Image (cartoon, rainbow, N blue to C red; front, side, top):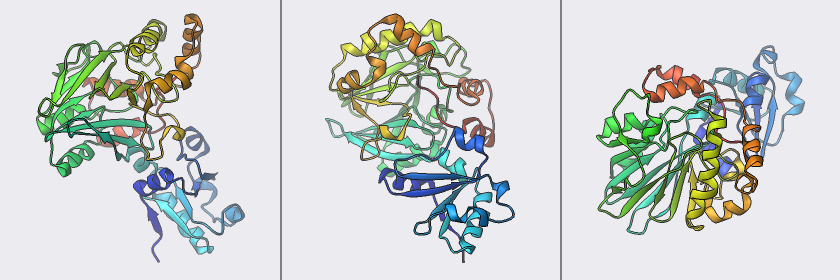
Length: 375
C-alpha cells in the first residue's frame, strides 16, 4: 500500500484552519532549530534520520496513536522511508511531498479585498519563508509587487484571471529572497520598476521608481503612489494603492519593524528608518491597511490567512512604533538584529544581475527563515 503524502498546499490549509498536526522532523537538530513548520496547533518531535535507519521502535511511544504523523525531511527521500517504517508499526503516517524545499517555495494566493472601481487586490503568502507579494488587478491589467522567483505562480494566476501583467515592482533590492520581477517583466512585456537609490550596482535596465511617479493600472482607476521611505535599504519605497492599502515592503511589519543592516550600514540607516516610521508614516491616514513584504510569526496571519492591519492599530500595538526617545530607538534597533539571512550577499548580487546561479543553487541560497525584522 502506497504511503500517503501531503503537499505544501494541503499543510498550509491545515495551518490556516488551525487544525492539529503532529510532525516528526527527521532533519538534523541544527536545521530543525533554525527553521521548521510552525503553527498554532502543531506538535513537533525532532529525531535525526540517522538515528532511525535501524528502525523506529525506540520512538513509537512518543508518537500519537490516534492521529496522523507527518514525517518531514529536507528533500523527501528520508521521510518516505521513515513513514513506511512507522506505518509498518501500525501508526498512520504520511510524508511532506518535496520536503522542506517544497515548503519553502509554496505560495498561497489570498484575495485581500476589492478596489473602488472594480479592481481586486491579491496577496501571495509564502508560508514557509514568510515572504508576501502582491497583485493589483484592474480593467484587464495587473501589477505584481515584490514577487518571488516562483514566477509561474503569478503568470498562471494572471492568465486564469484573464488579465495582462503590465507593470512589475520591487519595493527595494531584496536581500533575503531572489526576486522574480525582471523575469516576469521579460516574459510578459511588462515594465519593471526599481528604486534608483537601490540600483547603483544593477546590471540591467529598469524604470526609476521615485516620488511623484504615479503608475496607472487599468483604465486610470488605480493609481499607485510611491512614497520614498528609506531605512531597510536606502531606496526602500512604499506604495499607497487605491487610497486604501499601504504596501510597506520591509520597512514596517505587523509585529515588528525592518532591519537597517543588510548592506552593512545599520548605524547610517537607522536614522532614516526612524524618520520613515515616525514621521513619513505618521502623515498618512490611520485607516490605511498595512500590507508588508514579510511576516515573522504565524500569529500575524488573520483568520483568512492574509497578513495586514490598519496603520493606526500598528501605531498603538507595534512596539517598534512606540519608542519616543530617539537614542533608545537606535539602541533597540542596532542591538536586536537577528543573524543575517542565509547567503544574503549572494542573493543581493543575484538581484543586481551580477551573478546567475542555477535553479538548484537558488533554492539552497533561500533555504531557512526570513530574517528581515528587528527582534
